[in-house]
Every structure is written in C-alpha cells, then in structure tokens.
Length: 353
Image 1 (cartoon, helix red, strand yellow):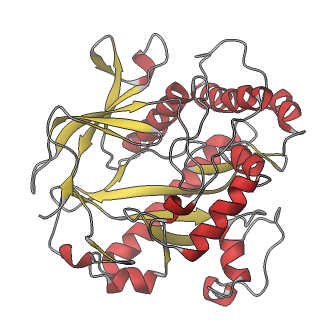
Image 2 (cartoon, one colour):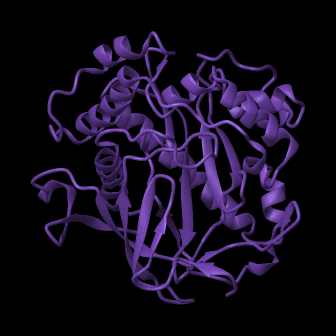
C-alpha cells in the first residue's frame, strides 16, 4: 500500500491533541502496536494547537476513552484498545491506582490519499484491502444546536433538509426523533462533508459496509447517550472513527465518547470543547479563519495574519473542570481533587458563553 502511516517503529507522531508512539509498525495483514500519549493541548476550527493547555485534560480524555472502549469490548465489539499504562504495565481501568494519560492500542495502516491541487485521489484504496483506517469521520446528530455545521450547510443551500428526513429546521434545543447520520473526510487538510452516495462512489467501502457502519454509529450514539445521561448530560452530537482489522472486520479506533469527540450539554449549556469555540467565535481571529476557509480549501492557514488569544484564566480553569468532572462521573472514581459539580462549573462559564 502506498503513502501509509503510522511512522516507523520508535518514532512519535505529534497531533494537535495527542501523540502516537509506534512500538511495532502495522503491515498489510498484521496490526502494529503503539500508544497514545494524551496531552493537555486542544484544537478548534482545524487550527491545530491553541495557545493554552487545559489542566488534566489529557488524563481525563484517556480515562473516558478507556471507559467506552471497555464497555464496547464487554458488549462484543472490536476495538483497537489494549489498556492503560501505569508504571510500565498495561492495566484495565479498574486496576489503576491513579489517572493515566497513556493508552496502548493496536495500529492499522493509515493510507493518505495523494493531493493534487484542491482535490484528493482516493484511487489508492480498493475494496479488497484490509487492516486500514477508513478515511472518514462518522457523525451522529441528535439535535441541531446553534452554531452546528449542519445548520450552516442548510443555510448555504449545500444540503437539503428533506434528504435527511426533515421538513423544517429543528429548534436548537429540539431533540430529533431519530439521529442524523453524517460523514466527513478524515485525512484532508480541511474536513469536507460528503453524502453517503459520494462515499460509495470513492470505491473504498461498499453498500454492505455502509449499512454496517450506520448500525455501528447508531449503537455508539445510544451507548454514549445512555452513559452520559447518568451524570445529567445530553449527548447532542459526536463522531467515531472506524477501521478494518486484518480480517476486514469493523473496529472502533482513536477514541469516542469524550468532550472532544462529542458535544455535551447540561440544561442547554455546552459542556465540551464547544465552550472554547463559543468564546473564540466572538473574536476577530475567528472571523479571519472563517473568511479564509471559505476562499481556500487547501492552505488557508497561510493567509491568516492574526493568532488566537489565550483564554481568560477563569474560563480555562472551568474547561479543565468539565473534562475532569465528566471522567469522574462516568467512571465513578474521584481521579482528581476539588472538582466542582456540573452546576457550579456552569455558573463559572456563563459569563463567557
């Protein structure tokens, strides 16, 4: 296979949120092994690393991701999760004596579609390939909150509500009778939404695969929704990533169910990375990002002259509490000290959102 990742053994691939250390590289019919090192970095609007670090975010994401992976495994689903690291040992969540920011995973091949100008060539994929990352993000929407990309695409006339079974745009706080299942590219410079027909025409997955993916996505949505509801949260929307294992069986990869992958609310107030997005939407930097993205699908960051300002200290601390509180409530363990309740955290962020 051409143009594949992860990096060779021993190398670290740095992302905007977490790093990947490759222990053994994957091959066409053999998965590799590696570990995610979750950081306190964060990213919004495809910008990459933002100026602040969020306290304990990496550990909280790692714990939440492990919680959902272990739930999926108990229910018979395949995942690439192998366990969490503590003092050089790989352990289950229940075996940890304290929070961990290192997750051991199995690795599949990542095949990057070659770029030519503003287009990407997905001809490097074929139906008979296995052991590779499916190059899309699979998205579920249980509501269409204000600021949601789906709402903006409808307003621009890019998509038609009736294609999604809707006669009119739902109110921002209205729950959909059934989730909208959406899909976007994963390995392009700027994420690009696709229809399911467009996905099929790329000749990477077939109709049977798509039906299986939709059922898997719907199940993940239901699992996350039911689990976070125990802590009083609503699961508005979220994404999952999937891969084929060496036998071409569908497998959950990356992480799922975290405040980075999902949009959670508490009594209508966003309690996820959306809090930071809402703050930055009021800045001139965001206006410039939006303008350049609309003009350039590739290389838009080159044209941006400004930089994002740091978050106010009070807001930064509250966002850290969001991640910590969700990890505590999901797992039922007090991993972090002096973390307020969701109600008190909401009081701290109200003046900013």
